Amino acid sequence: MTVRLYNTLSRRIDELQPINDNTIKMYTCGLTVYSHPHIGNWLGYIYWDVLVRVLRVSGYAVERTQNITDVGHLTSDDDNGEDKMEKGARAEGITAWDVAQKYIDIADREAGELGLVPADHLVRATAMIDQQIEFAKILDDKGYLYRIAGDGMYFDTSKLEQYGQLARLDIDGLEAGARVSVEGKRNITDFAVWKFSPSDQKRDMEWDSPWGRGFPGWHLECSVIARETLGDQIDIHTGGIDHIPVHHTNEIAQTEAITGKQFASVWLHVNHIKVDGQKMSKSLGNIYTLDDITRRGYDLDAFKVFALSKHYRKEGNFTWSSMDAAAHRLTAWRNMAALRHQPKYLGDAWLTMRETPGYKHILFDEPFRFIYSQLKDDLNTVEPLMWLDQLTHSIVVMPSNEQFLHKFSLLLQAIDDLLGLNIAQKTPDISDDLKQIIMKRQTARANQDWQQSDELRHQLARQGITIRDTRWGQLWEYCQE
Image 1 (cartoon, one colour):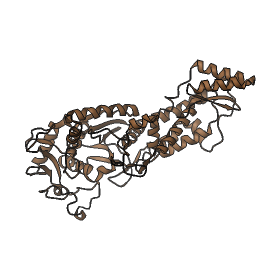
Image 2 (image 1 turned 60 degrees about the horizontal axis):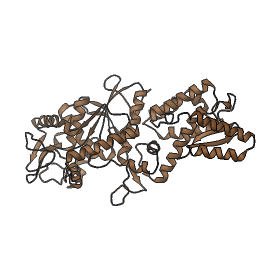
Image 3 (image 1 turned 120 degrees about the horizontal axis):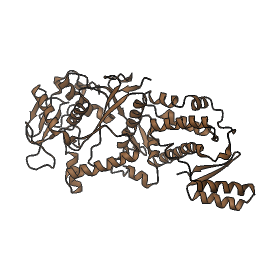
């Protein structure tokens, strides 16, 4: 079935048309590893993880590259300021190489804790310095670069007619000085391809080049890593909306100046989140990490529920109350999944679903269709989660009918395959010992021994199990987070 995505380049929702048969080549802008990643950094990777899952369920082979920026990302996008890695090194009293490794290790751990599908190629910028120099030499030989003494080699954007197409830049209308803080730039939009090391200090990360000792500009690494791992043309390029006017625009300029071909067919951009309605900033003390979330007792899958509860192109707002809501939704879904493990005494004949239009048909006849149809339509994650809420309220009790259980298991597997929320995987059956306590409590209730019944309920609760008494009998659930 056709996957449709909003393409920043065309400003419309386009059908995905693979360049090469059934293979999708996808590039994701990675982290700059100068500090601990925060929740806003992880938001995009959660969406792109779902995208990869949807593409694979759709029958595509996905080859994906993600870079790691460990050099060259200055504190200002206009090629001014200090390299973030060098700044981080000075702040922590260690080398830039050590800073990079420290936060790469943290990012790897957190990506694993989020259950994200690993990229096929995860490449550090510093692992491809030779290739970046060679790429820049080709640009220089073609006449695209010029030297600013004491600063670096810059790309002359006036030599490309289509420069700024992604961002729809009105270059003539840009305010004077908006992107010309570097003295000697020929054009307001020119950008650094290679920066020279300061003459009065030695950097942790610097290399010899045909133009002088220095380091690559931030934009260069993505063009080179993408070309080296995926080829001249790719199907999908992802990143944040803040990358549109400068970073991604400059990637396109560099790559297409060399290849003469369209770099990426589809450009996807995730919007930001605020915290309590405000931009994240150190001064406000509202920059949270995944560790902050787990320290408060939340499952990281609940953070993924929070993220996927908004469309990737919409701005979000993080609050701890929104995390509470996400955690309760996740627990409710997992308790729904746990219905398939209920005691056999419930039997086969009980009512299994309330009559909710549409949902019964989907559960029994088309377990993948609804969620999949929404996700392949510009990665709409909002409706599938709302549908899960409806389904949770629709199922009353789970019988031991094998056909029903098979269909229900297919649905749960579809949800986990597409959304990665571990709804089924984290709802294993309870132990036989716990089931014996439940059965013992049933006997106590039948004998009207309410004291023993309450004692057994508390015993179960201490082991993370809540008991709900229904007209069908006892149903166990996982305790609310």
